[in-house]
Length: 124
Image 1: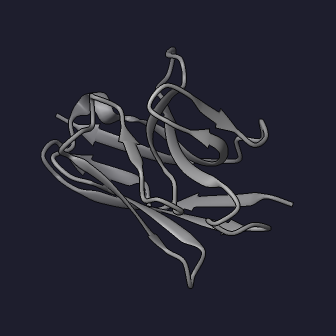
Image 2 (image 1 turned 135 degrees about the vertical axis):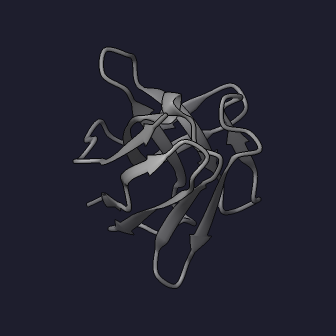
């Protein structure tokens, strides 16, 4: 069973940094790609970044390019999202997901279980 648990959110001032963690179980990063998503109150959920472990291909949303970076620790089956130069508009609940498809034009989640996520709040 695919399970993911997010952690590391918090309250930070604009310009600050946070590192989110996503602990995966029931699969490895060779089986599926990994994506980070976020949803702000009253807004649609949006993809932040997805990553294919096999070939290292990574796709970032334009809004976070150059500020966010995804990395993985395969031994721990954990993915991280380093978020720098945070802005108030980054405020959202962040989720990680296993993906069947992570490409420049299409991201497809393995299942629709979105879990608890982790809240990131950036104050101005």
